[in-house]
Length: 188
Image 1 (spheres, rainbow, N blue to C red):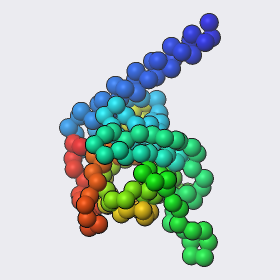
Image 2: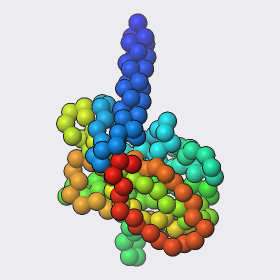
Image 3: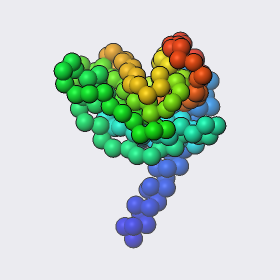
Image 4: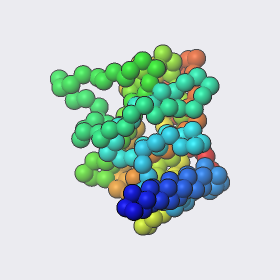
């Protein structure tokens, strides 16, 4: 009987998450609302990569297809920060993948590191997931910059103690290494 209860709860949670994420993508407002218990790292049905604070995900970006989540693990403290001079080397990602780490610092700042194992630069869009109130989340568009091939890219959002995660979408490989950092698009 307990197994059935757990299975039903998991099914209800998955259904609630699907409805919540559908609302994130479909709503045209700049700060869109969704209802769910808590975000989790995953690839959504809409093909967005959702990563939560404190986790590290390895994602394959196949040409012409949706992203594939290969692994999710806890991110050690400091994993989203640039390496300090004289300590640690730059990290490599497996060929054909992107490794994404997201962490919150003690002052409330949120850091994201993307390590590219791709042979081409790529652009993407991002939305910060915020806890608006218990059981309610908003997705706020934010600006991000082109990720260059075989390098690391860092994003920093100051004073974001309510940020629970980031939703990354619209991945597009580039034929040039020109770095662009477009303004966030409302409603995306």
